[in-house]
Structures are given as structure tokens and as C-alpha cells.
Image 1 (cartoon, rainbow, N blue to C red):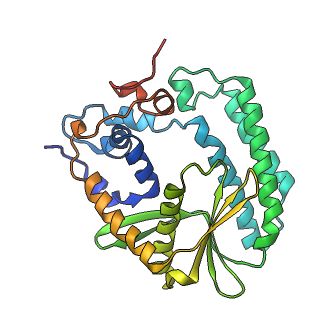
Image 2: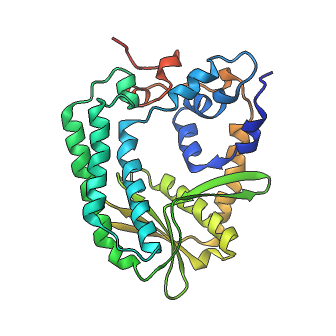
Length: 287
């Protein structure tokens, strides 16, 4: 019987990120969310797991950097201070330079044996600046919206299941319509996955703002192209998601035994996995 630290049960909740990891590789899910809290005969030392969690995939870094800079610019707007594209782009380039100066040593792929060429940083800088330029160009459409929240972790419950969300921007239109905006720095590869994420946001907003689904709009803004993809959900749709989340959460927590979390190895996914070093089934070939 696995014994877990009580803190695990205090923070254990469903999130869209957990959903993605669970459906990508359950072994990765185990290492990410359960292994750090195992107290009795751990398969891998929890301290080792916590150290590996410090690495970040190179595919994730750009999005994290852009979201951080956009969040700071929105905060300036909320404080009635001028937003500054030049400052934002300079700040982004400085952050990219920091990664380049240490040779990408904090990248998961580097830790797993991949060399990071200089061209990667040039492309990272160029793509990031394109996204920031797009954001500033589109921000004119958002000035009339009341800024309610941005980049904050929020928690709500579906029955006895806790759910965690983090909406990029919550704005209220002049006609009082609530709009939940998610900035995307990559491609929209899976429409269902994206709809699930946005529906979870609507469930949160319904509870937080005491609104019906009809009074809430959501949108994806693709910062590489400037395209905007709106979503409107009927009550029946959000009810389906409201029923799905607890079912999945029960499945995620049916066992905490290492053997009940099978690996789904692939070269690309394993190379970007923080835990390839400690996973016997990894597809990473170390030289």
C-alpha cells in the first residue's frame, strides 16, 4: 500500500494540464504528480523527482516567456500605465539570451542528450517577437474591455472534485458580456482538447461570476498569425464536461501504485520528458 504525504491530498485536483499529461503518458503523470509525495519505498527518490521537475521542454519555453511578458504589459494597462512594445521585445530577447548563455542546460531535451543549435535561439527570438507584435496590434480591440483578471490560478469544485484553471485574460465587454481569452503561441492541433480547456474555463466563470453559459464567451487568439477563434458553449455542452471531469479524476486516482501507470514511449515525447532519465521504458537512447 503506497503511503503519500498528506500535502498531496490537499493539492490534488483536476486541471487541463493534468488531463493532457494523463492522456499522453500515464508514467509521466505518475512521476510529475504522484512520485514527489511517496513516503513508503519510493521507486525513485522523491528528491530526484523534484530536481528533474526543474527542467523545461524547449517547446514550452517560448510560450512561458511570452505569457510572462504579456502579463506584465496587461498589468501596466490595468494600472493605467502605458504599455511598451519596445520594452516588451527587449525583455523577451534578454530572456532568450539567458538561455543561450548557459547553452540551454535547463532544457529537458538538453538534459536528455540533445544538442541545442544556435539556430534554435535565433528562431525562438524571431517567433517570440512576432507573437508580441501581434499581441500589441490586437490589443487595440481589448482597450474597451474592463480587465477583471489575468494569469491567475483559480480553483472551484465540481461536487467533491477540485478543479484548477488559469485564464490568460478575463475581460468584460461594454454590453456586459464576459469574454475569456487564451493567448496561443503555437498551433491548434486538437480541436477537442482546446474545446475542453475552454469549457473548463466556462465552468469556473459560471461559479465565480454567477453567470449562465450564454453570458460567457471564450476565444483563442493565435499570436503567430493573429487569427481569433471564438467559442460559445450551450448549457448542455458544459454539463457534459462537468460530468466528464469527475469521472476522469476518479480514474486518475484509482491507484497510486507505480505499476498501474504504464509508459507510452515515443522518441519525440520521451526526449521532451523530464523523467526520461528514471523511466525504464524511455525511448531516449543515451550516447
